[in-house]
Image (cartoon, rainbow, N blue to C red; front, side, top):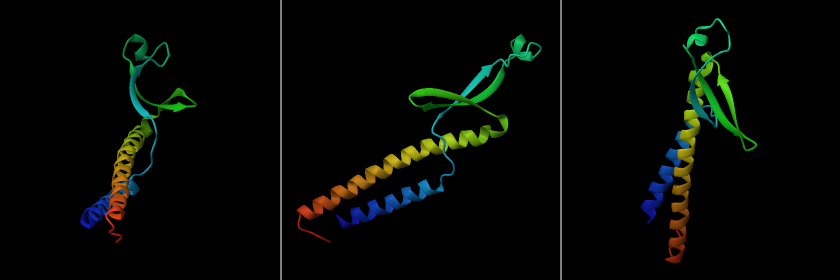
Length: 114
């Protein structure tokens, strides 16, 4: 049982290390849209729509959308990906910690209090 705990603790350390390496986060979803800008002489008025990137997120129970400037699109994509990765790591860490708690409880039941 002790070797299992050692492996679980190492796994938890590894997950926390991965979490620490993540940079900025945004809780939201990236959406790619094609739309018109509204200028009457623009190519989009003739059907050649503009590509744009948006982030949707919840604020007070309502979905909000912001448009991302072209210079910030790569950064926004990375931030949203980092958030999704953090959610997965957090779930994994929680499961590992749950196993650690379970193994500690079973050790105490067995009378082994190391």
